[in-house]
Image (cartoon, rainbow, N blue to C red):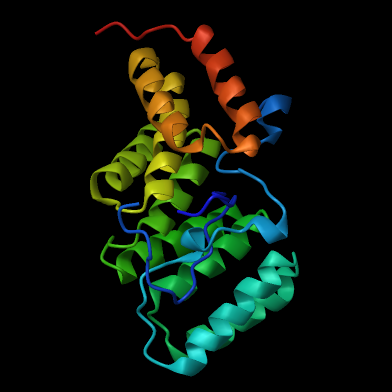
Length: 219
């Protein structure tokens, strides 16, 4: 991962190969994976999905859709993704990106449907729709389901920033079910990757404050 490590609210997927495979309350307005950042800070690793494009045309349309999404033009982004999907109707990368658009347009039920479709299309090999779905489940207080998804990413993911994001999100989910000790462990694992990312300072402080008030669940 390069020196400018960033994470999007929603993880848009390009056709690139993974280059670094080793590698609510008002305060919650810094929402779930909402590690926000300026457009020129985008780290390519976060846009890498499974390179499963069969045609150059679909790949090009998907890339154009991502560019429109980065400019916050979600209508045109959706149009490009739909064009790409017409060419490759079972492409998990494109389906995930349509899920992103649905979520950004606050249509969470549609986003859940699309992220699930993307997971099925990739045989759960692509971690990005799983992360995205876990975040929505957390937001909808489907905590047990969010935990299962974040744990899946940690067990099967390979990209460092994806794993750190899953640790960060899992710490928040654990707090909600009173697993305070586990939450602290997950938060510390996320810090190892994102400690130098300025956008994370407030997010870490927010979770740390929640940890201070966390009541450990008794077995």
